[in-house]
Length: 407
Image 1 (cartoon, helix red, strand yellow):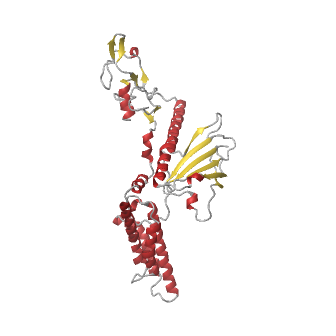
Image 2 (cartoon, rainbow, N blue to C red):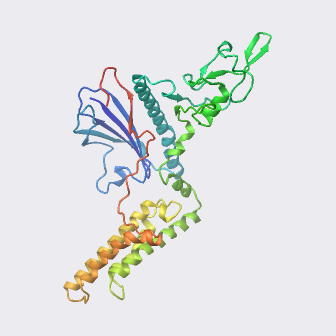
Image 3 (cartoon, rainbow, N blue to C red):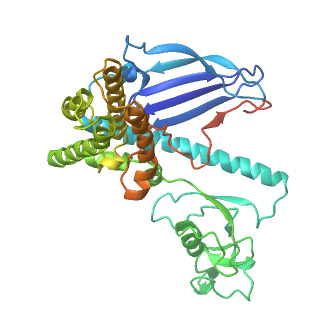
């Protein structure tokens, strides 16, 4: 049966997890390889609050869908023991950058090549013409190698005798094609022909189509479908949301970190303030409010601010924790009102407090961000964040046996 080997790297702890997932198709022998960078998340071992999770364990989960076969299988999860050693801030960020640049970069390149091969096979089956087929443009070996032909199928090399007399010069730079020397007529620079029939100097058309990434003929504007090979510098284009901001703040001065922590505490109080007036009767003093405004704020400052990013609105983890404090405050006030009512101490109707209070809180969640530009979203969990793939494929087939069914 085929098997998926998935490598997950978790942003907060930079721990690496290897997951081996078999399929239920006994006929397929393909091996799939996948990579994921899980932003704003800890690995299962770091999240676990009970007994220590083993470094290697098995669990039942859906298998790799293949050939119409579906079902649950036992997958093997492995955490590297050597990753769980104390790391400095610089080492953690170096590990994150290395994974996204090197391993994830190579994975994307493999995805790109496979995408091109699949597209080419489909176009060959459809007998696509040279004007309508897809081409693969290699990246330059170095900045000085302008004479390197990066796509032989698109840039067809020509000899002097292949150039018609009517084509006296390059259509791009207007330099004459033929120059006379002691050995006879020679090309002034390498000539290539596009599928549309127009002739250019190789360096000229490479600069236009390859470097500037303008996939059109300079003369007739015929547009070509070109897949440009990923370069080593492209990895920064696919960083997860908030990655660059977190890195910038993490290496900022301590005074800047302190300022951001103060801003987060200010936003904590701004979120908690409506709960004070909505859920506690006048004079708006309750044990829940007193706890949240004093000990709650101290707990938030001391233990729950880890990775602030640029501004309170861009610190998703801390904002989720703020939301949980707000909801706990509302629930605490509600319980306090119910106890007071049933013990005969409270004088307010339960219809007013807390029923209408919860309705008003729901209205705040909907109206306040739109009306005042102030965020009062009370989401309690971080959204699943996965590094998006430009090819919308989670894994790629790196090795397959001929004659076998592909997943």
